[in-house]
Image (tube, rainbow, N blue to C red):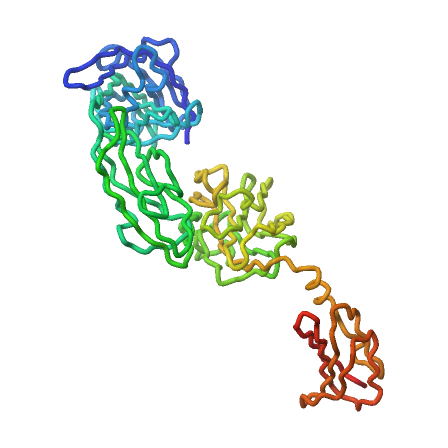
Length: 515
């Protein structure tokens, strides 16, 4: 993700055959378009151009035309979802080397941090390029949207490999078909019709309709229904919460400015009794930002440190089970043998067991590392299991990653994605229901002293219906009504079984030694 400043002026032209065309001369605007280093105006291939220098200080340079801020035409024409052909010309001086990319940029509407998306590229050698050379590529159909969620631009991006290089670019052009008819139907590719898949957060995926801007998706639990989801999707995939052992029906209708596709067919599929989770990981091998121990409830799991061969960026410890009870609080501590300032430790618990860590309250811990360390122990984060959590097994995900490097923003909110440096570990939690007051009292009962001489005491006889004492052969030697003190002076020395018969039908059993 790179920060890019854009401002531009356009020469607008409309071609024949319902084609939308722009030709831009960025040097005519006082506000230059640039990345990292401000360009200067120069003679371009046809008319004015932009000159920028890549060197040891400015290793990445670029310029672009902002499609969203057009003031002299209808910007929706370049956001109609159709494939767009973009072109620019370049020259090069100096002996530096690198790669020159023709790219499109995108950013959340109104944002300032743009993503750089290569379309095509050319290797730049040490040789001078004095003849104007053209780069042409296509922004894929379905990329430029009308929903206003994104701003778009196109231009170039140069990544230096060595030496100093001056890149001159000019003749920024874009052309795109203007659509006047509704799109055709698409085909759902996953899940397939009639298939059985895992529950959790499965994705419905379909092929792009050539002239579609977006897609109207309906998901229901009966044919023709949309009780699970009914909305518009800008891409060609959508994830939704799916329960176990349930049949779903789905239909996708492509749409554009001219209308909706007609006659699109519905598919059905079912889920089994397993819950699948999204993937998350650090690099293929975790040399840095590595988890070495997770302690939570009865979990105290030590994993390999940052030594060769380096462990993987994801480790599956779902066979390690932590037992927790609703309403109780447990301390979470994460250790690492190599963390750095800017690292973030997060933990998620899927309290509703729907295969998604992004639900409210499921991010249970966030720790910001402020200093480099080769023996790091996180502060304790106390996690209280909510009363609304499911009863039974679910998943806990713990991750550490470098927030100053390249990473998926979804790691912070859903626990899904990848990071250039870091590691992810998954565990299983077994969540028990909150104990009723009677259960708490029952579990608190004890007999003492142990060993005893003649008198054995019962700490609490509330809820006790009767008391039975047996020897080790199973023979009953005494039976009595509830009492706080039991006189067993007539028994021989040895080991005895004390059975407290509870009013709820259960039995509390203790072993006691008479001396």
